[in-house]
Length: 225
Image 1 (tube, rainbow, N blue to C red):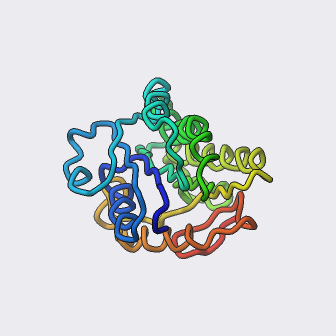
Image 2: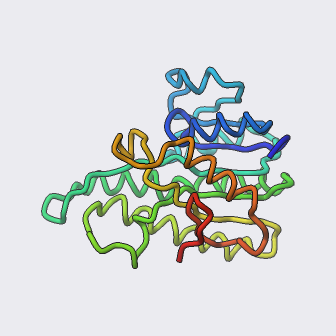
């Protein structure tokens, strides 16, 4: 990914921050976004361009696209997301569900739509959405986590729609499962470190070919249904 321009959303911590570190380590030009760049101390310590972005806010997404002007983007990593409570149906918080859909589902769609002109000017034309196996219909045998599961399932379908629409235009768009990662969202008991997850995901991204367009992979490179 040397000399490629990569935009990473939700880059102030966790997987997003680790993406920026490792991408800079291989010589990529990184544009990192955060809702509050002034508070993103670890991110500001890296040699990356930082732009403010709230993926759930249409004006914020438009402002990002305008700020980037005619910059070419080779790879977009839609990483920004949020977790949710594991409550059952009797104690659902519908305001939380709406927020999860705004961030996890509509957020990546807004960002991708706004940045398509930048991606079309780039050489890579790669789009990667960070999803979760918890959004899988067939893999869900435990229930709960209504907001997180359904918002990621919606992201998976949004990805399939985008992949179908962009087919034949030189794009390779995929969704990826990063594993259960030790982040603020995943918790300290998670078995996979951010470093291991991102190393694996970057290997997957580096190997992407046209035949992978529309597919679903995990961080080990295994293809998921």
